[in-house]
Length: 66
Image (cartoon, rainbow, N blue to C red; front, side, top):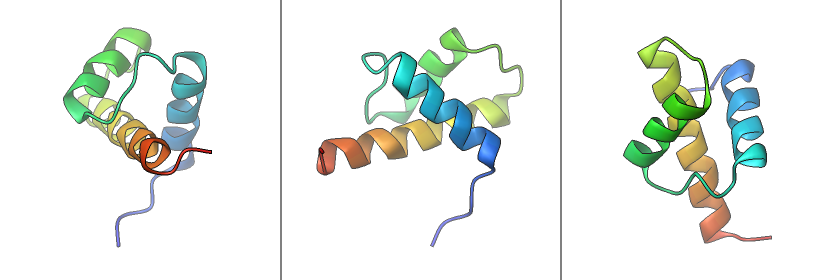
């Protein structure tokens, strides 16, 4: 079991994937750089949490496409 992510992390992550689906994939380091480029988040911890949630969502989409 993992930790529960705050709503603002999920909201920003879903918004980024919806607006820029081609920029994100299942690799954390790549997503971390893309979150840094596409947002104005100054906190490294928040950026990493957003990138981690984006990575998790993209891996789920790849494994179980709609």
